[in-house]
Image (cartoon, rainbow, N blue to C red; front, side):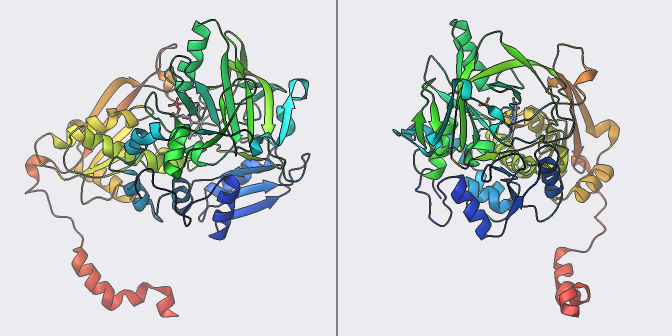
Length: 496
Ligand SMILES: Cc1cc2nc3c(=O)[nH]c(=O)nc-3n(C[C@H](O)[C@H](O)[C@H](O)COP(=O)(O)O)c2cc1C
């Protein structure tokens, strides 16, 4: 499908409700009734993501809340659901990665200026309005996702919408929000260059409060997918959502801030981030699988109004020890983006890139290459560890020959222990881009955010390619011939 092409009826859906119908039609939705928000919803999500098949879960009849006030999680952790969300005709992980490569994501961004959101006079999000003293963030069944969380993270798979006061560029970022009062949310942004932070800082420099909208239930394309993905500065995720869907996103103007609110959002809040007004948030189970961020003071959002559908759906995307809600989508997106970035940097011979979920979809990076010259494999490792999509939250980059399948961790480990000499082929980098959610950040001085990297060149030594011992395994041709004749011995259904 070409960038900007009208969405096909086969793949398309209008909003999260149609998305749910589509997922149910292909058997990947489970409806769960009566689970409590205090402990059960979070634990059921955790059980679900560790099982195959893993379903999208729609919780209803949450004790203490009106029927119809629902929670949707695990939106994009299978190939079929991620493909549906991204409007890609893919059914497998490799088709998805291929569909996102060769400039697809860059193409969305290039087209985005033509897909400005379309302002509507009204929208379903305004069905119910809470203003002033009526505002109560606890009106929704926001779960305690993990039992050691410091509070109710109503915003996990959310979209925090801000605007650059100088240029009008609107941004949507997935930044976690905990309920810290009936009308107050915490806003945690991991790095100083989060786009939402840049926007809010500009307002503060002008002596004004920063206006924000947070959607807490919306089309999963907007969040967790696009809002959780780094777009170039100046590119709006709201526009990119329009590019992917083939039609501008329908928005309404926020009565309080004037910011765009997706008209079909299930729940949205509007308010202000005032300079110096902070609140305590955390700890929260984080994407590397720990509570590394701890408890700390962060900017507070003063919520002036809440808008929601009559029977609203809160969309959650809780991180945790992987696999978690969005480790699969991270793996797919960052593998595709990094493969393109390596080729864009001019690196030849890259056959595959994979960031396995076991390595959080980011910390472990595996690149397969066809070696062409001395130093090629080292170059591939160094570049992969530092190109923009892979530089943040990396730890280990492994370069393997193209006879190794990076998605098969048994093969990767075998290559590491048989083809990499620890002294010669392990390269340590210090003081790389660190992260507040890295459990090893405490090894570095307080006030700094660095992290180390290791690059493992697990390719056969280039100067010994001709003399490296052959692999003790039959050729694929022989195996397929023998399988055709003898495979029945191993196939249960043929035996039956
Ligand atoms: C579900 C999900 C939750 C996330 N939570 C946070 C968060 O709490 N804080 C943060 O800084 N980044 C978080 N991220 C990563 C950012 O959303 C991501 O880096 C995004 O590119 C940020 O948007 P921006 O580039 O427009 O600032 C999350 C990503 C996902 C997919």
